[in-house]
Length: 260
Image (cartoon, rainbow, N blue to C red; front, top):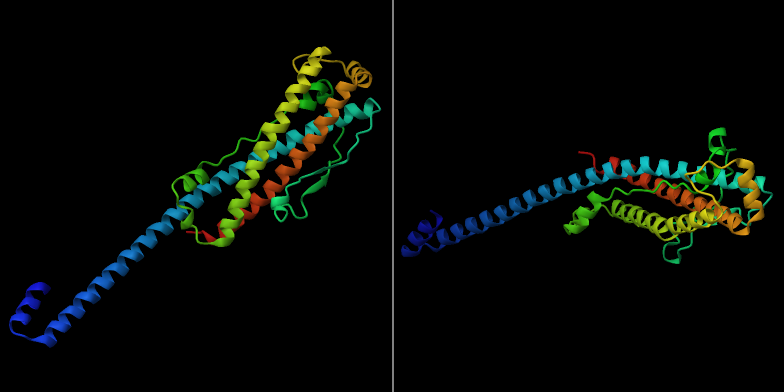
């Protein structure tokens, strides 16, 4: 309709009317583009909200998992420290430390920690001290929502820089804990179990406490294995603690800034 009006004005050489028609057309196009942009921004915001809601759910699941990881690490510390104490063997280190020069700020004030003073093992644990000293609850990360966000190339939808910073730090810590499990905790546990089996010790066998203590006291390789278990359980405890703090920080940010 506008085009027919313009052609009519051209035939009649009504230049003022032509100018007005062109202005109307331009304004209409601009408004259409702006409305389209607003709609696209609204859709992007809703998509970002869905991604962040899914990430919140994953992080809450992680926090429950991290509690189990901490409890498992504390059981290993308790059993291994008790074995060493009863065998009269002093642990060489009372502290664990995270060392990563690239992310010093991330670990500021949390990069080292005294290995927790464990409670005395329960009576039931003392009937299976060898198993308890090396039993690991592995952290099973929940990162499906974050990986979907990254895989879809949608990170730019999150325009809150503070959320992005904490989000990246949180998943960096997820990777640190996973790598530590895969590269350190599991190999040490497997090597220790092999050493134990050469001395007749197995998680599947009941071992009298006094017999186990005597074996550890008399066998340097067993004592070293128990001391290593205590040390690396302390490291896992520290890493899970730092990650839990970062997860709680992330959930608070999402609750405040991403409420529907």
